[in-house]
Length: 357
Ligand code: IPM
Ligand code: MG
Image (tube, rainbow, N blue to C red):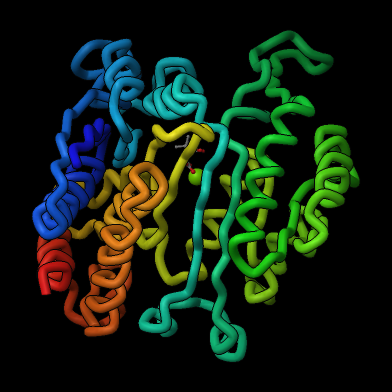
């Protein structure tokens, strides 16, 4: 089979980690007889430097015409001073919106080989955890009305959170379906003791829960959830939450896996074309040093094979190769802790070697 993949390398370590994932995909293609055709498009700071805007029209068109899209990361200090609508991050929000990617799947699991990297207490680590965060991605405060105005105390800025029934229903359904295929436990995270949007969210979760009697659903307030994630992460199976809460909690979840450099994600529209990216940022401080961990992006490519192309065994071969190199004790700098650290390329080579056996 032949698949077209748009590449959004972006900024900082973005190009290095995307190149790693491309090399892995090529190796998978070779092994299983698939042809992946890669077309790079500009996004983020790289696009600002090249054409004065973070998300050129050509990028949007190219992504929409691809079978799937792989993204590195965007942003960096060089563009921090730009107004909000010209920042690299705006491109990420723009492409999510343009592709209708309202579903963001962020799996966070503890690899047995990385238990020593988990910052939690030994008895908590011993229980392990395997969480799927289902984050709403095209609504809420990220996309609400915002601006500056003259307020009661003078200069004032505001951002607004709003969620329609339709937006909540569709993401909550995805979460229930996801839970059904896993351990059948769903935790909906909100701030219903304060926010009206959360109260609507919670009401809809309860309505939909009635359609899924086989899934054990519960609500949790976001402040408590932040605490429970480090107190007892094993209690979670699938988490569903709003755009902003999902952003924050997925970083927290990534840290207890050992490193944010390990976490992949899939952004989906319900149709087949999605966008796959590591959950970490562009790490400009280590860009070009070969220190970046390519695993989150490589695992994002594995998610692409699974969700976009239904190439189950090909996807699994990547996941297994990553497991094997970790079990063999190979580490990049972020998870090395005293061990010899491999460079981005060396780690990629090791994963490719495992794939080929
Ligand atoms: C993420 C990132 C983005 C977000 C930023 C870069 C806009 O933090 O994908 O988690 O907040 O969604
Ligand atoms: Mg984030």
